[in-house]
Length: 163
Image (tube, rainbow, N blue to C red; front, side, top):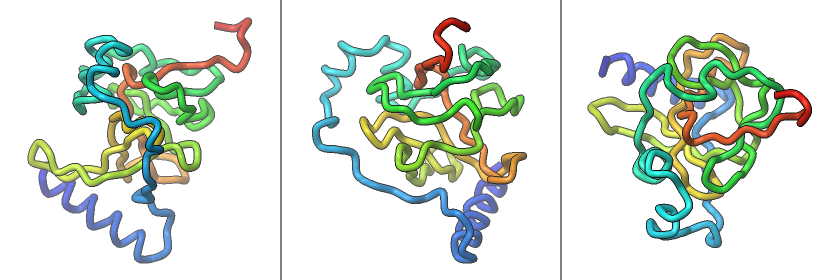
């Protein structure tokens, strides 16, 4: 498993060096969205706090949005910032909602070396909420699979009359 993620990291660096789309673009979180743990504990459910603020992970195949394919926008549960359009969502059978692209500028990417592996963590660029990870094994033309915790997401349907 460690070898897989080492290869994945090297592949990401190689693609970046070849001028391919980089998934490691970063930008700073706005200062006004820097909130204390006490603020977030008051605002979020215990499970949402564990995932968004403590970088937890929900159990696979348990999340509300794993097999959810309505038209609309997926936003950060903490700050309601739009993150993914439903047109980028696909069924990956990995157990978590999967997207092949994020809304431009809404996600920050950081190297994650926890749990004995190297991954790329995806973070809400607006509030620093942990969303999940992105991998270079997606089946679509982007080659990306944003693997996101359902608890980190809120959904806004395009047509409010359809649920």
